[in-house]
Image 1 (cartoon, rainbow, N blue to C red):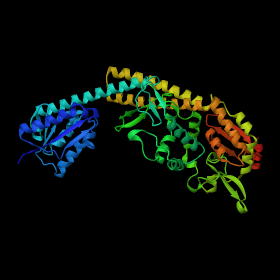
Image 2 (image 1 turned 60 degrees about the vertical axis):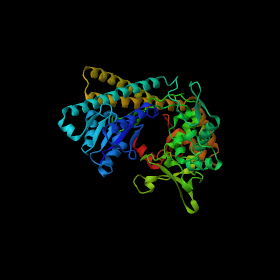
Image 3 (image 1 turned 180 degrees about the vertical axis):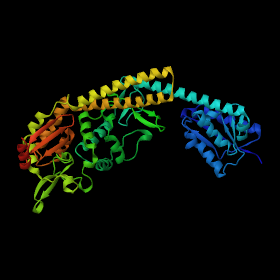
Image 4 (image 1 turned 90 degrees about the vertical axis):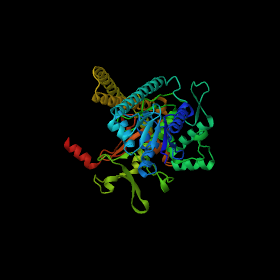
Length: 521
């Protein structure tokens, strides 16, 4: 009975399939079986197209792994041949791991043939022939070194590209609402698609939910963003979420990423953002306003309550002065009665002190003293953000210094511990730079004309709060991180997102609190 041979082809890029690699590997297999009287199985073939062997994916989840499964299941008989162009087609991992893959195949009774030199590898040969064992390890070592060097060159090339990203196009890929210019000098918005992006943000800014936005776009037959094969037939909520949550491309910012495998798993790591890389489809102020609403989706009305008018202008930001928890609006008395603000924890019997604050007093204070609120808002240029930036810049400087010292030490003697520490510092440095970029963006969005515009919107919304509390609530949540309703002092402490606070007196201090303070004095 003629012994069967199976061809295993692998190439890591689609270009190799279109080029000479596919033809070369195929013809070599046909020539080998003809010369040695084997029967090449053309029905059960194993090809890993566009899969790299550097991290062993072809053996774990690819067709090489499928070949081993077929052997163990009896679909491929022991004594069969596996034809590969060279051992680096099987694995480009570290030599120890790569040899283990070869060993696993041979121990199942399979003869591995490398077509480039006609060498045969079997379990007996690896045990009895030191040359075969040594050759396989040396080939795996060389293949791994080539892959490591190639990876370094690719990372260095992309690093150089990223450094020039502010002035040169990094890649032709771009979001579906823009296109690359013919001369590759930059990108241009596609007017009708960019208008759809702006409309989605405008709907989100007035608290229209993601499901409702999806329904509106599908009902109106608005074309889905994208082009060619990437363009779908209908809108899905998942795409709306992706577009609205932390997608700086809509304001022209590109965030490059790189693959980090220092933890043993492939993780996409964000690098320093490049502002102005794309043309902006959405105004930065509108973007920031929507992001403020996306921070805590749990605070947004859902389900049958989504279209119910808001009854609490401080909904989502009112805080208890004792425990820092949420204060919620309740009503007391017959037929609804009067509205009050109480600590949610105290109301649920989960601790804290129960104290009811007249809601109307708090809302009246906000409306009547809106000009004072606007006037006492801290300037966006300073405050908490500047302090955070100063701290981040100090951490970046310290991390860069530590990284330089480690790199100098490595030149004197490379050790795995030093290399691991360098990777840790590089990851920390990237995270710090990303945080620095976010703080600069947040600072720019909360100062000057943008801050003034938001404050004007807040003032206008408070004037009409009796008719509709939604605009005022959205404006307050975009500007404030919290509003502490301190019933002990009869004050309302507004904590601004960009740093600082403003305090308003909405009523008289609590008698017990006032008495205790006077007695203590």
